[in-house]
Amino acid sequence: MSAARRLLLTAAVAGTLLCALWFVPSANAVDQGGVRVGVPANDGRLAETGGRDTVPYVLGGTAFLAVGASFVVLAMRRRGRAS
Image (cartoon, rainbow, N blue to C red):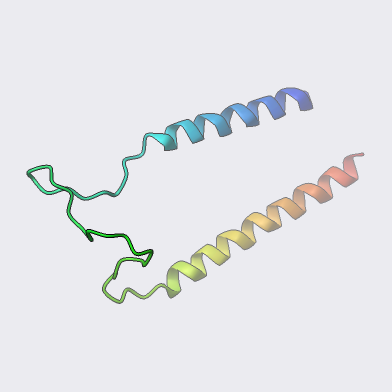
């Protein structure tokens, strides 16, 4: 597969993913009567989550970031060898 077709395929897949994510439902809560529930005024603060421990999420996100960065480094090394 040529490089131009590969780039076009990547762009098409990325565009399709973004379009699919557009239709993911939002997290606006409504009660059974259709009335929106929650804080009446948004003062810019985050909602109270009940003291959930976020350490596993931070560590997991950092691990995924490291794996992704290593894939980028590996791809750049392979690209340098091929030329």
